[in-house]
Length: 427
Image (tube, rainbow, N blue to C red):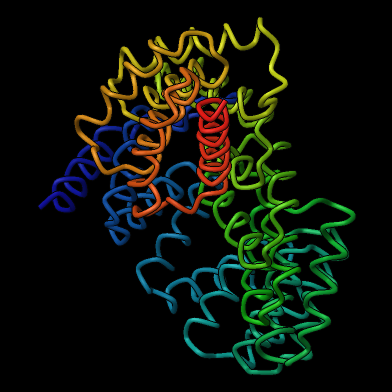
């Protein structure tokens, strides 16, 4: 329906304008309403009604003699699979001449599509020899690929590549070398050499990734992904790089990558924690808190700040850690933060009773937690109530986590305290 409407509309316009031909000035319309015809023709292309588009552009060319309309006409005829029409039209216009290479290219493509490969080959070689144009070398290579003459196809591709080092040509060469000629090392060498000289574009990097993946070359795959990430900083690429580092168990290099690229600070934080790099973990948690506003990051920052210095913590830093943990515990009501805060208040004897109050709070919901009971027992120890501490520790050793190194140290300290009490009582 749309096609018929366009044809009728254009036909009427041509009739109405047939008597208005004149000598054209530069950039002047060939006839009244030319822009309207173009609009209809381009709309037909957009709708993929290639037969209508071809018909309209042919009329535009006949009316104006403008070559761009002729090229559009032939391109749409090819899309409509009217290959013989293209061949006939080019023959009519060129009479065998190569003076307009673009027209000849349309004919070669039409011959290939009609499986007239020998005729296409002769014409393609003749054109490439005359023009020395990369596109024409490519076209010649396409004919040889269709004929499965891969060595000759490679020869023309190589000639095309040398003309302008075009990455699309290189990619085609790499596929030919790798898949058709089984010259896998040569395919990789061509691609890698190109990347050293011209950089690794998404097209070339992805081709290397495909080859290295197929070859199970982990180091090559990692290198290609890292180069691709420098060009396209996409999360999916960063994840692939991290997966490869994890597979290699190369966590040092994964950390270096994440520090350099800032690709995933949450993963980096976990790596810092796993590696017990608490100073960096604290700083990164603080950064994530500023960025996200998630109060849990502030809590982690405080905990890792404390862990990074431990018993040697300065009064100023200790005060800062306590203030931050109080803020986090109050807002989140999380047992983890209350226990940590309570233990610090107890262990550093800042406010033992207040610390024990926090521990009792979390024990209400977790009465059999070895870690929370240990903190409470340590509070009694700090208050010199070692018998009460011992009672609690007797329960702790029966629970999961009761053999923790710190728990055992506390038991030893409490037992010493009890011995000292016995000695004093004997005196």
